[in-house]
Length: 175
View (cartoon, rainbow, N blue to C red):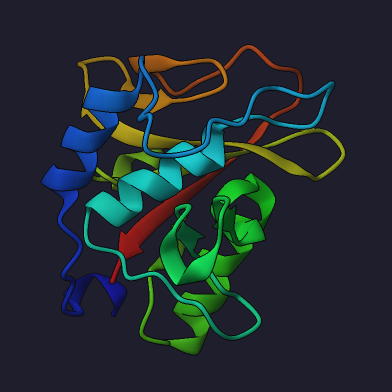
C-alpha cells in the first residue's frame, strides 16, 4: 500500500518554506503575475515548496519537472518546465509519476482531505473540468485544513474556497 512505502519527502522543510514565502515571494524565482484569466504563481510556489522538501528535479521524459535559474547551463534567463508552473500540468505529472513509480516527486490522489498531512497538496478544479489552482497544506485547525498559496498570497487559510462548482483533488506527496 502507498502509505507503507519509503518516503524521503521532508514535509517540515516544505511547510517551513511555504510559511516563509507565502506572503512575500522568494526573489530567487520568477514571480508569475495573474494574466487575464490564465492563472498566476500558485504552481510555481507549490513547486518551490516541493523542492524545499527534497523533491528532485526531473529534466527528461514526458513529465519533466524543473526550474533553472539564470546563469545555469549557459542560459541568460530563468527557464522552467510547464509542470513547474501550471497547476493542471503539475497535478497530472504527480499522478503519472506515481503510477509509473519513477524516481521523482510523486502524488497519489486520496478521497478525503482528512487523509492529508502537512506538505501534501490540494488542487482546485473548475466547472469545466480544468485544474486551475494549487495550494500546500501548512496547518490544521479544529475546523479546517489550512493551506498556504500564491495567487493570491495567503498563509494558513482554510482550504475551502467560495468559487462556484469547485472539485478538490487531495494529493499525498512522496519521493
